[in-house]
Image (cartoon, rainbow, N blue to C red; front, side, top):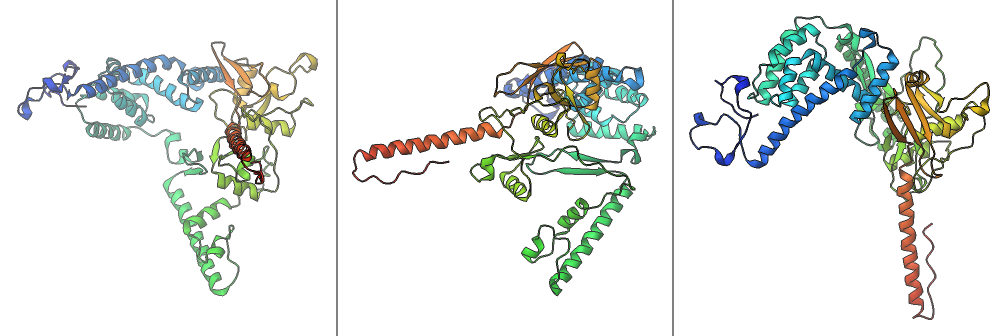
Length: 489
């Protein structure tokens, strides 16, 4: 953050910055009290001061949105509606908003004095956010100690010095409290599906006590090494290669790597449910692949479950391995999924699949819960059981998929969607009112590949038309015309 005079009171130190041109040359001991920066970097420093002020404003504005039914008796649906409203204001998902709102509440209630320094622009925003991240497991009593210490830390600390001070402080405070049950190694047992930035790659993370995870890793490694040894013997004796589902070992003449064998063993492991029957999946696993990509005429990626792009080569391979294909109709210019006719009160399986294609997550803006699992088909305009003609119809324009929590909130009247009129061929729109205080319009999901492929087809046709026109003109100068080129499709 620059160098300041160490003998000046911390809160009395100047906050301004001197221009590098105004610095007086001299010995190291004559260094000015403020950072000496050129005008270009002075602007950056001023922006960092403003960033701190804006962060403090955001914390104070968001803190009232934190409602904890377990602590203050707030209705769960009321708390959820408030969180969705905050997510819209932050322009982020509900899960991200939950973390930000909780941190805002903690900043106001647990770090009040350090927050005041943040409001002046003096305390770096990055420092404050790091303190919040590192202290989420501390009790309110320990947070008082954190606030009492950090409020006096000089901004002349380097980033390394700040991190060291914070680590030492937290190490001392953590030894003075018992970890809550959910923060112990036993309480953190879970399996998480993580998003990745690489197309076609997924990540599954297993978290638990170190001895249990180490035991799992060792058993998996021992099993993979045993299979690897069996593959070597099979090569020597000419027998069938064991655990070679892709035929890679047989094709290459080399045993599979330990990493690949561990993956295959884990992915093919039988799940012991102690005799409890597992119901069939409500939905199929959708891999949407453009037709031209299948034919090799386009490199538009496929989509797994509507949210994960997969490379064209992988999309073709998955399609080639499938025994059944389903046709999905989209508008060629907008990519809007074309509706199916309404036939009955209970949505058909085809209607449910269409709704999943339109939105692979809960339809409530900001919610990222997958519709593959605990989702419920909901009539946007309520169906009237006494007089069906007066209520909403069971048609795709009046249906969406909601997670159970937001379905309950809608039934309670805290979420009020209304379908807006739309032009045929264009994506549908839904107006959402949240808690009668926040409103937003959301467009239906579309097949992003359709417009791109339409452009490719139009460009191909334009080139064909240009070639045909060039041929026509050349024919005017020749007696024996060559055969006309075939159309591109």
